[in-house]
Amino acid sequence: MQFQASPKRPARESVIPMINVVFLLLVFFLMTAQITPPEPFEVDPPLANAETPAEGKAILFVTANGEMAFEDARGEDAVLLALQGYPEETPLMLRADKGVGAEKIAALLPKLAAAGVRSLKLVSASR
Image (cartoon, rainbow, N blue to C red; front, side, top):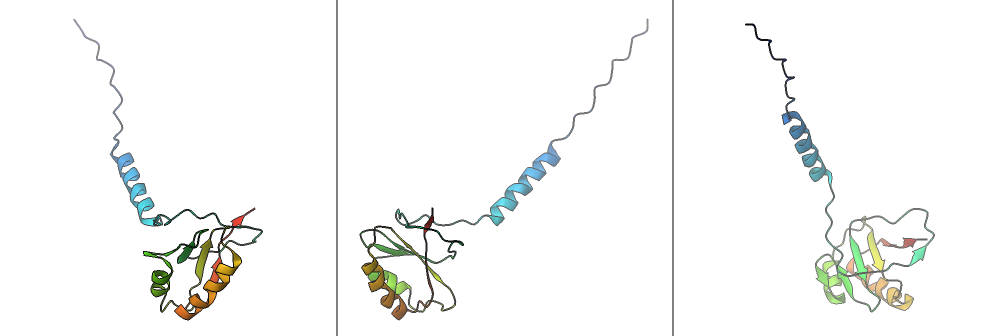
């Protein structure tokens, strides 16, 4: 009695190369991602018709009631102290709430200049 040879099953494809690719993609995205700290408080910037958005890494936050934050510093005195010796060539981004009066911003400018800030850019939301 002769038995028929059972048909050969196709060889399974290895998933190891796919795991390697996924791992490399994960490493790539982790290395290239810019991780930013959370904003210290919610700020609703004013609307503007700006052609190019203001960009920078150093951001000074000002709320509608005048609270200020810069990096880990909270409060006007702590913020001005943290800005002492700020690099002249680096612009400081001012992310002020639209409820902040112009007189508060105008009063803040000489204090920032005394702390060493020479370039200031106002962050606004586009219309």
